[in-house]
Image 1 (cartoon, helix red, strand yellow):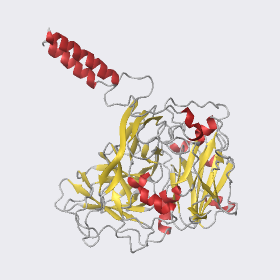
Image 2: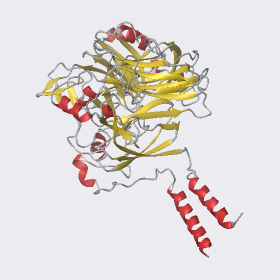
Image 3: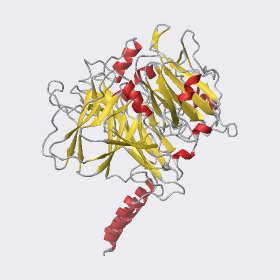
Image 4: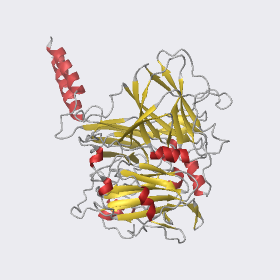
Length: 590
């Protein structure tokens, strides 16, 4: 082989080579630009939030214990944060991506998230946590795979399919914010999307022509893992596939007892995994449906998202009526009983080779109890607000974590009440003082009129009970103390309560929020402060952004347009390749 050709081949190989192996767990690198892109999912042209031009955004697919580096450039015209819904961020809250832990990334700046998916597996998603941005998109899948040495408790599927379902408004997120700021509730959405697309025209009187829909291509006889995420604003959705069973196997990082469902209610920001076998004949395609629950009958038809399941040997389009939803649109009894049927698989290994049930949460003594009561949005000092225990949270200009590290006075108070106070509601920055390695019982009492979803960053909690009426001490007699599923987002039905248990072993300041975007925006959230008394050290990332009372510490435009090492081809590879090519050129020119 001629020396010049050999050198050229060597240069190409070096350019494509992976970065030198780091000691310890592997690293995965991503470069993302968050910007507005044009779309018309329901036939109305509007700006949505895309990542690298994609809506929904690109997947983040990694394996347990990998380190993840995501360099985010904010090409929006507003500050931005991304949060990693369900990723526990063990031992550090710095990368959590909510306003209590991070200063938002200014427009035109970039910031690099670095975190480890420590001791986790399962199906999660990321989304922008800054006010109502998720209503415009910006979300994408997080899939954390088992290490090869840890078996999954079912046959390895033939394929993996991610579905994002969610209600959608033709009004942009700014207009939605203006409505809430002006004291007006958002009202009914304009439709339901599946993977960012509008509904298939199953009914010409309901769906106008020209709507682009999602088509899911499958092979007959094969079994696929469907990971389904409700990424909507505020609407619970019933998910089903025409003529196919849904074998539930996982929710938000926990393997579940394997049960077949014909349909399942998926509430705002919840994630589920189903195994679906393509065991039907292929005379036609099949409907994949996500329809609104607990909404007025007059709008339920327009709030029905429909995609198409297409067998490779299908003989024609989907036909017939959509598969039936639960009988009564307003009856929550079906949904609450269905929720109670979802149990933890206590014989399966999770991210580590011990059975999930080896952690006997029912035997641990509870150290703190918080009864959190919500009400319908109400006026506080002339502004529409929502509350927990009569307190409507207001985000300070200085994030809580920064204020704690730098001892900035007056930013927050550790005096959040552990029960409703039956007093006039107020706006405040009051947070919960948690006990490190304490076992906290939290009861969500929903005195509003809609289903609410609650999420806790930093942890998976055990869902031990839910029922109608007011929670009392006697309600503990109904708790499931053995195989309540561990997850990070749970629904609370109107006029009902849900109880969870959480082991506070992850130091940090963690966001506990309602996931319904409208009431979250209006103040229905709180933070839990968990301090490890044996380790008060707090290492600030080199790329920390400072704001509020600490703005003076921020170097002028220190992170503007500066991309990190998270590049498709590592910098060292590019450098070596360039040197080799220069050498080749020198030889050629002789």
